[in-house]
Amino acid sequence: MTCPCRVLCLVPKPECSKAQGQLPRHRATGPGLAKQVMTLPLFSGLDHHVLERLMADSTALGLERRSLLFSAGSPADCFYIVLDGQVKLSALTPDGRESIVEVFTPVSSFGEAAMLSNSVFPLHAEVIEDATLIRVGRRAFVATLKSDPIVGYRMLAGMCRWHQRLASEIHHLKQIPPWQRVAEFLLALTDTQAGQAVVSLPFNKEILASRVGIRRESLSRVLARLRDMGVSTEGNSVRIDDVASLRQRCAAAQ
Amino acid sequence: MTCPCRVLCLVPKPECSKAQGQLPRHRATGPGLAKQVMTLPLFSGLDHHVLERLMADSTALGLERRSLLFSAGSPADCFYIVLDGQVKLSALTPDGRESIVEVFTPVSSFGEAAMLSNSVFPLHAEVIEDATLIRVGRRAFVATLKSDPIVGYRMLAGMCRWHQRLASEIHHLKQIPPWQRVAEFLLALTDTQAGQAVVSLPFNKEILASRVGIRRESLSRVLARLRDMGVSTEGNSVRIDDVASLRQRCAAAQ
DNA sequence: ACGTGCCCTTGACTTTCGTCAGGCAAAAAG
DNA sequence: CTTTTTGCCTGACGAAAGTCAAGGGCACGT
Image (cartoon, rainbow over all chains, first blue to last red; front, side, top):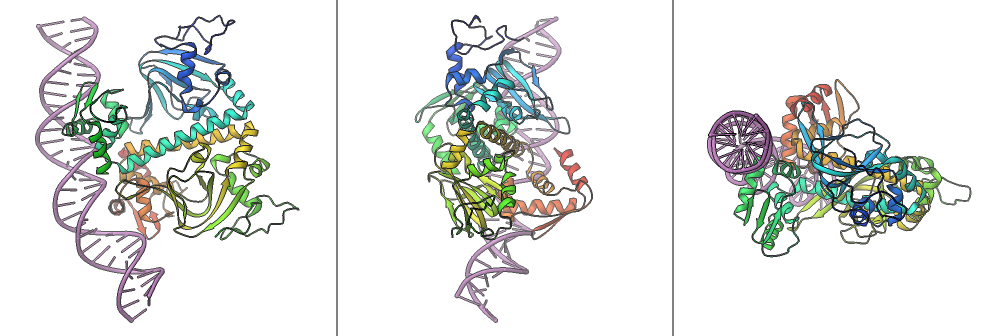
């Protein structure tokens, strides 16, 4: 279902009659929501009022698991921001198997590429965990972008930083062995620098395996092997006995 | 050595006293050069005069093999366009081994990310085949970018397309077995849809191996295996006996 | 209570990749 | 002309990932 509050009011104003807190299942509203959105690489460093102009014809969506957002080939007249839940982008291989390209968790965005290129979505997008999304319409976004040079500049810089991340992931996939990718993934989930840490996996192991580029059976084996290094898993929660030592092993091995 | 023509004149004007044809070992000059530069995703769809403003304080470089363009950590006050030759971007792993992140061949650009992010280069850049480059200075580029909204918009779209390419490469590395990545790399080098095709490798096999994410020994074995599928290699040239059939095998296997 | 589907794990087996080592040919350097 | 370097191939071996198959634990609905 579509959120009753069709037009987003990121920053409530006196003349705004839209009720706040209507985003289904989502905690932040108003300024809090804006703050979350600003953490996106695309929007980093932009002013509130610019953000409002960019998202002038955006709508909020509450979607249930298995909803199809769009499929490959459909026209890209918007892009999406994930506030809650999870959305999976996948491609269908020629023989009909599905290959998960990416999973988006809060707070992230996807589809800008297709929208700005004025083309169609190249992938399927499916909600895999009941989600709250913002659907950012093309018109206002592009209009704002064209009217203010600084906006484009900031967004460009943000995209560039994101590119570095992608490039480094490519580097990882090529040079780092799977067990280490798993270990580093786990380490990236915690802020603690030494001693023990407990992290909870942001998604199930099927998808985690896909993220690091191995089969789920292999992931099981890797996790079994990591047990010898003081990493114990139980359901969604993972306990790392000695963060520093694991970090060191990763650095040393490679 | 630095090109004697320090300031680029993409489109020669009456008052421009710089001699044309001074770019070492490079064929195109003036309008031809501009045409080449415009093929970059970053510049796609921009006008000539905008291009000139963007590149106002750019210089041409002729560099020999093994020249170090920049190393990780040095301030990013420019980016580079490869007109001729090859430049390798690499990282040094903790144990001192080198890992090649990317190789840039004509016509491509690199370093925009670091420059626009106002930070430092994260990688080493080394010329691996005598090269002709354009060094695009930060000042004029950013100034133009900030003054003209359309420029930023176009560049953003270009970056987004590039982003799709990176994302798809990540997908490949995760889901496609090495021999198939090699096969698809070869197939991507030719336009022919059926029958025989002869392609020449754009770089040596050490680097090709690095591109597809395997060791050079493995590449040798893969190429040996591909021989059974009608792919014969001899030095830099590769002959594919039946393009269509190889394509089909790639599609079927996965 | 029972069946069903989902998620995860494990074992046995196959395939492949990485590593170490050796060797060959052509080009470059002495 | 000899030596060195460079690029490439190949064999042997071990480690590791993929594949196939089976089974356990758990939540769910009936």
